[in-house]
Structures are given as C-alpha cells and as structure tokens.
Length: 225
Image (cartoon, rainbow, N blue to C red; front, side, top):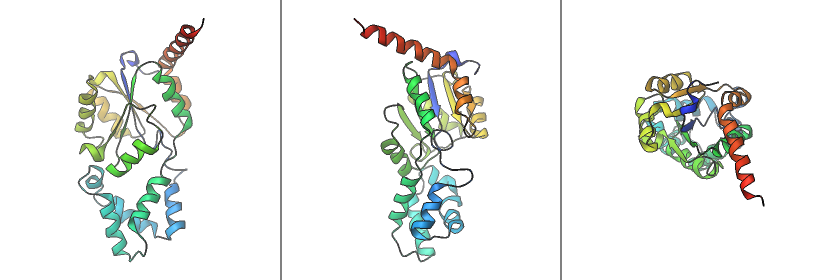
C-alpha cells in the first residue's frame, strides 16, 4: 500500500527498467543485435556514444546521431551510422505486457498516466509513436525534449506545470533510487519498481485497481437493457 494514494490524480511511469524491459538480466538485446548485425566492439561503442558526458545527449544539447557518426569515423566503421541508430531504436523496445494491463485498468478510473523518462529526443519520438502506449499514456515527458533529466528538480517541475497538479497529486513509479528520492523530496509519492515486480506493484496500487473494477462494472450496467 502507498500512503496518500487516495490523493493521486496522475501516475508518472518510468520507461526503461519499468514499462520497457530494456535488458535480460545484465544483457541488453540491442547490444546482441548490434554485434551480430555489424560486428562492432561493444565496449568502445558504448563508451564513445553513451558514457561520455551522458547529460549532453540526454538533455538534447547533443544529437545522438552526431555521436554515432563521430564513433563511426573514429573506428573506421564501413556502414551507415543511421542504420545503427535504427537498429538501436528498434531493438530497444520490449514492453512488459503485465504492466500494460495495469495501465489499461487504471485508465478506467480517469487518473492521468504519463511516461517520465530520461531519453534523448529521437528515442522519445520512437517511444511516442512505436511503443504502443498512445492509448494508455496521456503524454510522454522525455529529458531530451525537456532540457532537464531525473533526478533534477526541473524535470519534475515541468511535469507538474504541464499537468497543472500539485506535487502530492503525482505518483512516480521508477526503478531508480535517486529518482524516487528526488520526486519525494518535492512532495510526490514514489514507488521503487524492482525487476519482475509487477505483482508487488499491483498490490501497492490495489485501491486504484478496485476503483477501476467499479468503473468497469458501472460502464457495463449502463450499457445493458
């Protein structure tokens, strides 16, 4: 049970590590696909593209495609950097169907649901258009489009302003301890999601799930006769 859940008017879902199963154990499927398709040296690739000054590309100050092109030149990659980008975007989407069901049920209550993710702008567009969340999420807030990232206060402030809600009316579901702590410091409610923790989350959200059941039953009774 989450204390204060009765006051919640919006749920902000983290994407990677929560809604999206971005890894299997410690392995990222797109790593496997990248090595198989292009034969790249993964440690060099990851260090060059993602780990060097990550905030720059996470907040939209740098384009991840530019980084890919720089990497391609540095290692004399014979392929096209845009093909590498396309593979990464394609192979890094794997939504958790059980969490999708929870989202669908909560949507019956009228509670706003949004995605709140640290992702650059190109992947944000992929999530928005290709992840299949358009019918469940009312909006997608991504750091690459916002110019701020979790756990920075500006990230949460922008969501509060966009939704027109007070901090205590928003619940963050995230797998990052620092992100949860930062949200709670602002007054949000927080739930730290652990791998394969969909059952624990469902129990924590049970009051909302019961509201959804009542709403569904009401809709059914209204269509009879």
